[in-house]
Amino acid sequence: MLIYHDDEYVRQPRLQKLNRCYLAIPGLHMFGETDFKKAAIPLHEHIHPNRYEFTLILTGTQQYSVGSETYLLTGGDVFMTSPNEVHGSNRMPQSVARFLWFQLDVSCACGFLGLDHPFSDRLYEALIGYRRRVTHIPSADIDLLSRSFQCFLADTDAQRRLGHSLFLAFLSALLLPGDDTPQITPDIQRVLDYIESNIASELDFDTLAEVGTMSVSHLKSKFREQLGTAPREYINRLKIDRAKELLLHGSRTVTEIAFDLNFSSSNYFASVFKQFTGFTPTEYLKMNRK
Image (cartoon, rainbow, N blue to C red; front, side, top):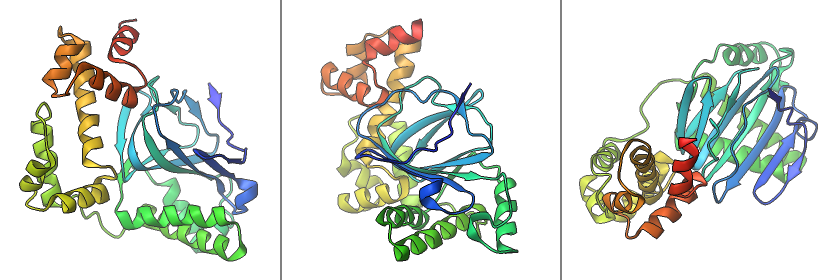
């Protein structure tokens, strides 16, 4: 079993990791951002000793597994794993996505996250008692964590203090929520239901806007705000998920599946399929048969 210590400091265009020495906040072991522009290698099963890990999907989708359970995450979803809990991507390539993640070391409760008693104790106890594997959070909370990370990157005393405050605000909202009000509004839910029921159709934006009784521009902005991804990317993800089912459990050819799901050509279908899975349809089928 791999043990990921995540002690290194990394500053690259698509991967940035701020380690505990850089952050200098008791209990905050690591804070990072990843931006996958194309499917990446699978995340092998691993553990983090004494550390909770939280991953916030900003855009795109990701698939993670814990034990026999697999979770498909989209924008605005926060995925949590507990200390020493085995997790990975279930041997599947990591999808196109941008996400933030951080780890909280719970080996010591004293002065947790730089807070004094009793505030440190309350947040620490809330973390230890946290059981939600996946939580969908509002855009305001997403903005808190995004701004916090950017402040830490700036690396000035004033920005670090602001980043620390924003991080505490985000964590308090996550661990100590005031209510469970749904974040998907009825108009967007109608659009989601329509997409799900008509995934094999063309699904143009004019039709979706009519279903949601809003303009196309309003649909696009509101959809991204609530789902964390663009409508077309969301639709293509569902189409590819349906395509994987048809490949594995049906008798239709790749070309037939492409046209069944309303792709303009089998080549375009193969291109989109590889973007989301890391494999062509044929490669995916061969891999799963093995």
